[in-house]
Image (cartoon, rainbow, N blue to C red; front, side, top):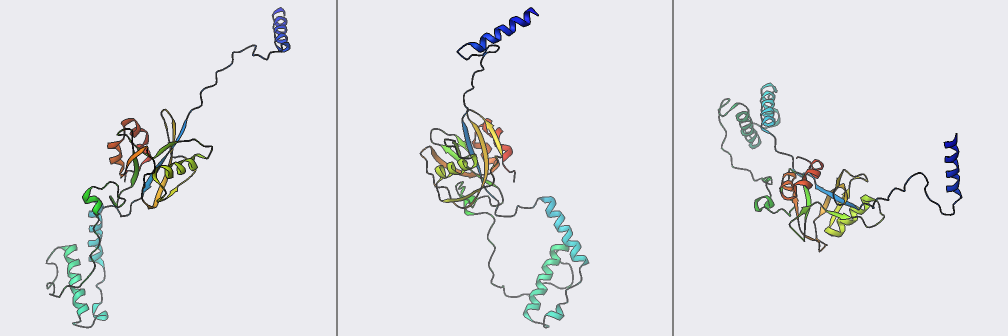
Length: 255
């Protein structure tokens, strides 16, 4: 009882003092405010279908052979006049399809000798940028995802577009504005959502936002950036620092 009375008296003395102070605990120090940065994972989606794997090629060839073997013959005499040029060309095309499915020499007769038809050749899958190794072109690696990386002017350091947050705007707005400030207004881009797709803790807390380029090209607009490149996931891993690569590699598509 005596100890309870002394505790209550000390508490009342603390309340009666003119200076407000903590009586039973020390004041916790306020941690320094952490700095925030936003980074943009700017993606150029594939513009070509991917090359099929060896398994996919074998599967489609097998299915094509089955289809050719079981399909009803095309009634060419109903659609073509006998001896017409179209019938002769159809005959040659059928011979080519049979050779593809069952081997050269399948069936009776051979191909007819006809003058070649003029036609537009399809564009090659390999672009001029692929042949010359131009990593700044958006036409390279048409069947892969490409990502924009920037080189810091103060050193040979490659990173995704990144900037410190200096305003009170939402993070996705700050990410979009910093991309325009660094890479110019010649690009038509779209930030996918308001939620970040990744986070990396370094000297600054970096929040990553995904974006797509719809048109245009980079026009460097910051003295802090000396170069840029559009790279695949594997190429980015060869240029950036190992610690940074460990933090961002899962945000990038493998294809």
